[in-house]
Image (cartoon, rainbow, N blue to C red; front, top):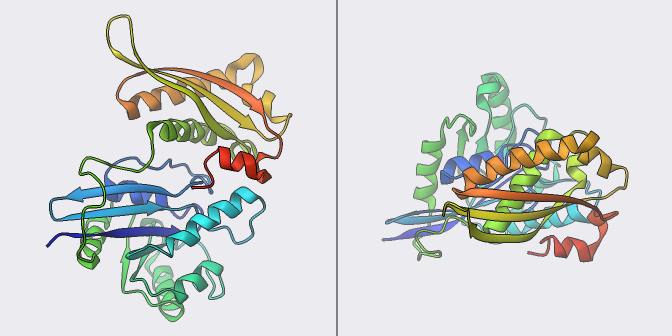
Length: 298
């Protein structure tokens, strides 16, 4: 009997959803930083074995009061996760406060999908705090199972994965055995560049940028080694943000390009020649046409 299904991960911004999916899949599918709202799209990671196939879905953190159309699109990805899940993983950060009338709690309470309540970062919280949250959530929602994990350190991941396998329905192979995601290399190199912006810059800059890969060419170096030539445009939403991104004498954009190129080479497994350009597209986060161009209509 072959088992398969869709396992969707939901939770607040910065709860550790991307870290969890990467730990479950065993590949670095989603970018990870300490900043909230890192994930902007719904990203699939596929784990295949002769006996099962699990299609994990990492969603953006649910934003209760969306400030931009972009954030509304991000919330729509979370809403879609309630429609196609065979198992739902609700990731909770014990260091945060929760209430029965939280919008995400309300949505989870109304669903019929098997629910695994997953307390992440348990290594940073005391047992009394976790016990209190567990009692609260048992009153608010109906978890089939409750887990305590540290996605960052791999604590409890094997037990969670075994439970997911046991909850899967009988089903077909949805994707080829060697496929790890539904996203292209172009998407991931753009995400890597955005990840480095999140790491390097502060305040509003990381949340005001979007990346567009203009060209992605597979070529060779002079000595016959594989080379990816990538040209990327970094869009900012304000004129004042462009000089900050570039830095004095181009120092900041040079550092960004070097760090991003190294990460891209690790991800692609080949040499990378990276060009970056900065352009201004004012208020792109509220522009439907540009949001569609950046892939927020998927």
